[in-house]
Image 1 (cartoon, each protein chain N blue to C red):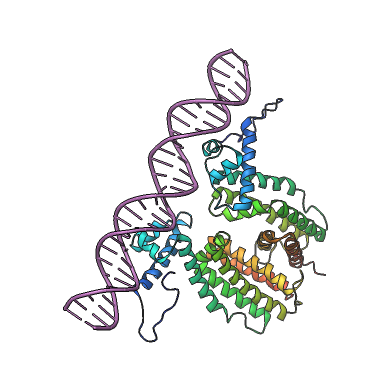
Image 2: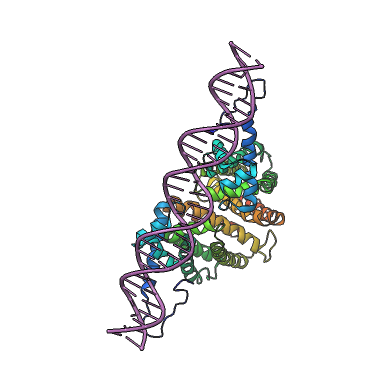
Length: 206
Length: 206
DNA sequence: ACAAAAATCGACACGGTGTAGACTTTGGGG
DNA sequence: CCCCAAAGTCTACACCGTGTCGATTTTTGT
């Protein structure tokens, strides 16, 4: 479809099409516009103008505003996946929780805008919904692992690790979603509260 | 602005303007359309057609699609407020939690569609954001009260009732949001899990 | 340096929005 | 009963954002 779907890295020469630059520029422009106009108000013409091309040219790269935003979300989410694999590997559950929450604060501080956008569009843009759902599953699996290591019985019943992890994941998502709209201080506060509830839920009181 | 802003209930005679009927019919149509097309796909023309009038006539009642949906949300949310005042009045915290969750299941089963819509549009339609924020605050206050009665220290610190209640509220909102999209069984499951975590957070283990 | 591929542009058709003005219905007083 | 103002409704229009098309220019590999 759009150029850049295949990396097309020629073995040696940096096959860096001019269009690859433009594509990144479009995504950057989109992120900037998203920041100060919001998704609804942002128009395809706005993005093109920000990049310095016409709408027609932009449609060469992406088929619609939704596709642009989807690509932006994909770029960000890919970044999350890379950096989050090694998290919560600690043996000590208490430390694992702390590490995970530190990581979460980082992610939302850096990418809060795009993550909020992804959540907002999950319903209306199936592709984004899929992307975010995948991401949430990673978090849920990580939380489940920590709960089980802390002694919570495995299983999908209401009082068992998997279901609890899902609920805790939504708690964290929503808390950070709101907090990251306000200030870094709010994010810190949300983080502390979520960490506390997570610890209690894992039976790690005191 | 639009008719019906003032109840205009003449003291005796039922001053039931023909327009009041239409207004309700529009809201009903909107709710129906919302159910099987979704907000984005639903057009002002669709709503008008469903009611059996033209777009022009609809604009006599509401200034835009957003206004229609806002009115629909307002109608539903008003309903929530009425019925939720007497909840969680029980002395026994454990019973209060159970009652609150039963209530929540009811609300989401009956009004899940509109509630999800309200949440989705909170960002883009400030008026709806305000409405939903108010509603969330009611829930948070109720949860706070239960936590305090169960012995959680009052205050806004991360380990104190108010902050914890907020996090728990988001957990419940998000869990039900997702579950109510799937099935009643999922809603029940979510309810049980949330209840369990709430109880643990309140220190009511065992 | 030249041809194919990549990129860009301007113009168009389409669909949804919101508004304006003319027309019809409704429902109290004279 | 009639009349008139208010309430309600309609058709037509202007606007704006979208997505597409064909013509044109630039890049790129050889």
